Image (cartoon, rainbow, N blue to C red):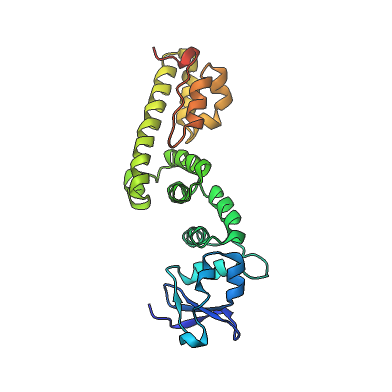
Length: 242
């Protein structure tokens, strides 16, 4: 899209770098600021110089995302993210990783961790793409507990390679869960606890202590610590298949 307006926040008359968002907004920024905070933006040093005819650097991010991203590159309070829509924030997190904006990376990762329970598939896609192993494992588990994380949603959100691993993880999770509950139902004294487990999204964490005291320590631990790419196979007492 051809630029149609200039950013209200980033419109400095002495700017030496002009960047256009995917939705047609121009950002008049200072190369020095971007260079200090991002190795990637340093490569745009020759753009928008007078001898280059006021060349514009076109980026794939939206204006909402760039407006947040550039705020991390100036001496000012960092932007407040609590009221930012997740889709915009997810775009910011991707941009921070893509352009290696050091001042934003930590905040974005922390916010993504907080979003693992509400947007597990999106967080999983981000975590796998950028090598955040612990976050990938946590968000994969959270996706097993969400009623809106079906196969269709996963196929739409995840990269093909991640989707394939997610399907295998889902099969493993459901198999372990079914085996767990199938063993519990064989013990009359455990039926009340089993009924409680059916009533909550994540019984393995909610009733962890009770499950461990009932003799399911290893199986409970296996469900809680199941990795997106690994599986624990330890067994004990009632954990042994009958």
